[in-house]
Length: 266
Image (cartoon, rainbow, N blue to C red; front, side, top):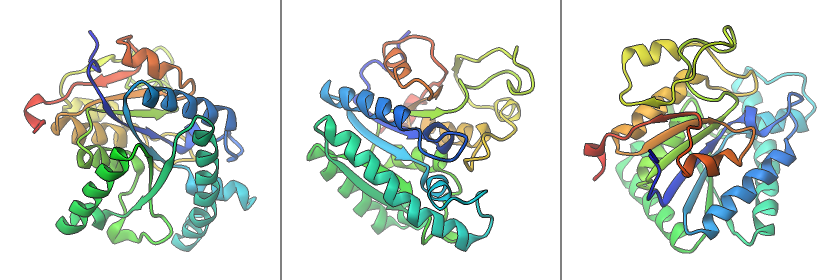
């Protein structure tokens, strides 16, 4: 069964571990492949929104730091450097395929405050109407504890809600939700479809992901929970081969699909 049949407006989230090499430097081949696939989907009539992590990780690499800073000031500085590089590359890649990008940086209060939330919704609608491809990240340079999303998985789900997306696809460094942690047990079976997120779902999602990002599988489950409650079908797939996006949208069993609560779709 194709759970994405008819999905026109799609939010994609790509994590730091997918965008970068182990060195922390950008994986340019993967970014080019991702830009090509998303551009092709736009050409086919889909409306695409991209939530991209990576600013802090890219900043760490560009500043030649040995490790990701733990202090707020250090992370903010890395984000300021990395976001410039990240958007420069995205804009260059998408422009090669004839598409215009738009940078949108958000903090938590942007979606918590009703007026600001309405302004954001209007801005997204205008950008999509104009044919732009919004690229969204948390505004790490100014975010403090009270106004952070905490991870871009949560941000992607909230963005999907604000733009009234038909689908949310999370690209990560693991191929989906398994019955057990596949890093500890490679034989752990992949769960292809989750009809409802339960305490058991959260239990088997325990553990963290790559050291280059901020989230793990549990944050992706929470994002899927937010999105599916809003009637948005969600998938978690391995982002190492962006061609898998085609296969997923064509109905193949790729990653883990979380079925939308159809009562949540207004």
